[in-house]
Length: 181
Length: 161
Image 1 (tube, rainbow over the protein chains, first blue to last red):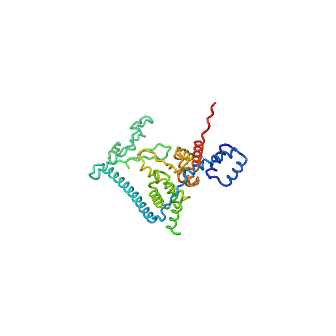
Image 2 (cartoon, rainbow over the protein chains, first blue to last red):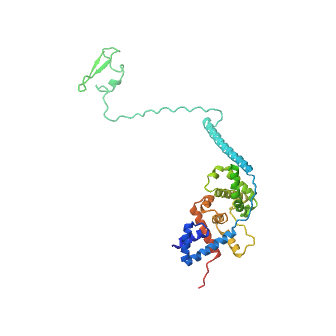
Image 3 (cartoon, rainbow over the protein chains, first blue to last red):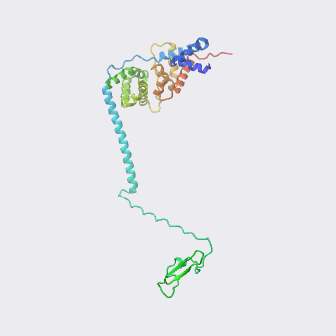
């Protein structure tokens, strides 16, 4: 048996904290090992002396304690503790409400502050188109030809109510414009 | 057995040990009865925990420890450490006096564990519950305490060369 383990077991034995089974095995070992038995006796003597010094003084508490009174006292204390918890909770709520009110009024105490104007919606960024060469404005496929209103188009046959229609018979053929509909 | 009887039985079982625990500490001895009452009132305040405790005795000792430490803290000047003390035993011989001195020299946590074991006969598990520490720590503290006491009473002989 290792010395450290033996010493730990001997201290537990001296303190009276060994289980019966382990105690039996240890006694068997001590019967065969005189040095260990001597060590065990020394530790037991030390603990015995400490036990005498720490012996419980003979004291008698009151025979009939006012247990009912103590119980009432405990109930009162518990109520006080609960009231304290509720007070803390109420204080926390009040503080939260105050802070909320303060934040809402802006701290001037005059009532509700003006609502901030809603931010302007973000505008779409315009991105310059550098994808290709600039298309001539007067070409057949010019975008202006499709998007411009009737006023922007050249007057056909001198009428202001002239309408144009792009006729595209087939995707493989060139579309042609029908006017004066 | 009704509630009152159960409480009275608990008092009969635990009160003498608790009172001795307080009386054994000089700083608390004068107020031992009040501290005992305070311990029971606090235990009754948390009756559900007392009933649910693995060892009601250990739970009461844990409560008594807090009550004692509170009282010491209130009594001690600010900054002074509150710790348990061992009262001198009347009519003690030289070896007992040496042992008393050696116990007084122990670190407070070790001394406290030893007191609960030797005076109150609490098991390692109960001491762990009272002090709110693992059982292994209780064992370690007790072992160190016993070895230090043995060393103090039987100092190693110095051989001159």
